[in-house]
Image (cartoon, rainbow, N blue to C red):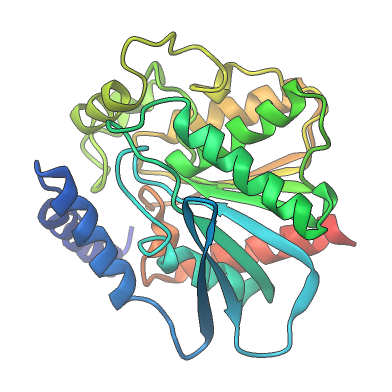
Length: 295
């Protein structure tokens, strides 16, 4: 890792420490403040609206762009924090790199609303898109961290109900195993500037305390992926959730799913949010994947 990225990792660790707050509401407010501050209002526009009682927004580039396909983004935050505002650090980049509209939404958060609230809200948003006239093949599901979990859970739920699946999935540092059984929890513990095992344990308890954690709608790693759409996974080499991505990739290979995974050297959890070259490269790769599956 070069010196600039080392310094940035130290900065990210400090900022993350400042944002993290035992007062959950203050933690959420701090995240929203960062998201609003980093929103790129020159290149993209944000149109806020409601889907029943769910706050949502369309993120669109301020130029002529593709309308046939859209991205449905599920934000991260351990199912207890995060929002469409905080996710603007990603959704604006996705809109810019792909020249497609991005829909992001505020699903209900734990511990006030534990499992299955988030999946129920995601399904409601999916149904809204179908009512708008989009077909399932017009939608690419994207998600980061817990949002990657939610994108997978939504796809598994659609499959369980015998419904058509999205055209593809893009998963950035997905949280796929709430049993925390991956070896990277130990091997990367000293390297990850964003996550630690104690934080993960709190999020698991808030979202799925008392539940069977191997339920595929909670831990998608344990799901049946036969018939899943093409999927692209991005993960940082230095994150404790590295095993979540590696094992998911292998599960997809075993199920004969068209899957690609890129592991970014020296990078951390959801590094795509950060102002580094690897983040720009990753967004370019996301766009390439989408163009490939939309041809």
